[in-house]
Length: 82
Ligand SMILES: [Zn+2]
Image 1: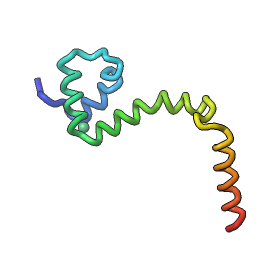
Image 2 (image 1 turned 120 degrees about the vertical axis):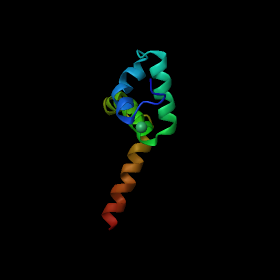
Image 3 (image 1 turned 90 degrees about the horizontal axis):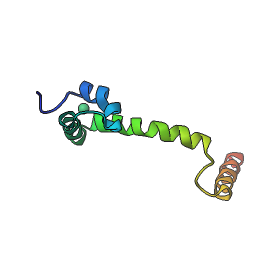
């Protein structure tokens, strides 16, 4: 058994890794690989952001709507000036 899985292995197994369905030896290899490999770490972050992304697009913005409106008004004012 290889100590470290390849990038391809990691990215293939990442969903199962996140679900915790992989055997411990595989999880350890992926965990180590994620610590060492920026590409796969970024890939994992992207994967984790996916369900959150769907949620945030449906849910109202977390900030106060007044703050969002104010920011929007400022952007529109800036656009009018130019
Ligand atoms: Zn990698």
